[in-house]
Length: 490
Ligand SMILES: Cc1cc2nc3c(=O)[nH]c(=O)nc-3n(C[C@H](O)[C@H](O)[C@H](O)COP(=O)(O)OP(=O)(O)OC[C@H]3O[C@@H](n4cnc5c(N)ncnc54)[C@H](O)[C@@H]3O)c2cc1C
Ligand SMILES: NC(=O)c1ccc[n+]([C@@H]2O[C@H](COP(=O)([O-])OP(=O)(O)OC[C@H]3O[C@@H](n4cnc5c(N)ncnc54)[C@H](OP(=O)(O)O)[C@@H]3O)[C@@H](O)[C@H]2O)c1
Image (cartoon, rainbow, N blue to C red; front, side, top):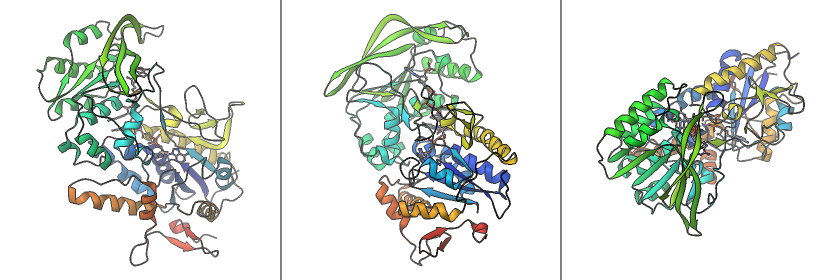
């Protein structure tokens, strides 16, 4: 039985500070604030996951969703431990010793491979790399993209493919008002890319684009969206019984593109029914990509699948980006489904691979729960499901009983092991620094890309000696961030 009172609260660790982690924390604090305390762990000093490092820089409105997460972070029962990676800086076992429940919200950190010859040639990239690079993710800041070629090929028909295509042809004027990483702005300004060919293995009715993202291509300055009317017609020849209203609107947008006259100095061509077969080139890089033409065929369930026709096409290019999906990675000591790259779960309860029973006190949300699909808002409902399961287990006394539930215990351990721990006030200093660098240039922020620099900014005390955090000095001299009203509980 988990006895909870305001003086003996349930302590929950949320691992990952993306939308899923924040929605889970928000639901927990919204539904059980009087009995729950949340500590959020994040491997980077900065929060927000893919809202900071995935969402395209020319979509600033979407990023304003972080205002909701800021409200959660301001809750007196919430603490943020940035620059702490589960697996590297703290183990699952240690979390189990300190918390009644753990919620994994680590997203899908890596990319999927095409599994074809030549994929590793220079000039062949995962969209994950390019996205991380232009969004100033510290892990990708050192990458060097050769944009000296006139034509780039993007594989995949999802929204990430469209983000990548847009970023390759947006003008410097458009990009220079955004929070695109400074190192990227310089390279893109001198880019020779004039044509981006986006390749779908199935037809327009099966594409995963959403309507606003497909339509906005038509609003870009000096960019023509090139759709071949005959190819579009061929790709729509087999009616899709599962065609959604979104797909119908996509098809209408594509028909309009097919009818529009060529204009603009740069273009995005949308091609369908083709699968990559091989990348060819040499040690200097990719020279061309061979693609197999496909036909659509219904499988047993009625879904239309791509089947090779045997006819191939070669496109000359020096830059290939595969935007065919992200992929979750295993966390040490945490069950992992190697086939679907998710943490196995039933409605968010983590399942033990041995007997498929729920591992008491372990939960999962977001992309690492259900795979790398869904927009930001999808994670809200998803987190609600997991939190409902957790609260049901709390009610039924099924949560774990930690050995050291005292909030000071975990913080002492972390500060000892990771002196450069970034608390929420530290992140606010980074945030303020980035915004003030952007402001004179009409940009929302200029992102810091180097972790050491982030840590220096986060650690800098304000001139009056008040660093903004609610700090107590523990008797051993270590700083201890307290939970607002719970700080004095005995
Ligand atoms: C390129 C791209 C653009 C997108 N654009 C949009 C958009 O414009 N609009 C929209 O609605 N949706 C967009 N999405 C989808 C949206 O970003 C996702 O639905 C959402 O971010 C998934 O949330 P998450 O919390 O599961 O994962 P994430 O956002 O990836 O967050 C996971 C967090 O966990 C942290 N983490 C990972 N491992 C550890 C560890 N071991 N220890 C501690 N922390 C860890 C990561 O650093 C990260 O901060 C986009 C996705 C991508 C890939
Ligand atoms: N602005 C936004 O709202 C925005 C921006 C970016 C991302 N997101 C969201 O983030 C999620 C992830 O986006 P995503 O684009 O990474 O994934 P996605 O939507 O799942 O699209 C992946 C695409 O890759 C194709 N593909 C997969 N394997 C392939 C292969 N081996 N060869 C060729 N093509 C292959 C898929 O085709 P099949 O359909 O044939 O499998 C599909 O077209 C989505 O939910 C997306 O909406 C939203």
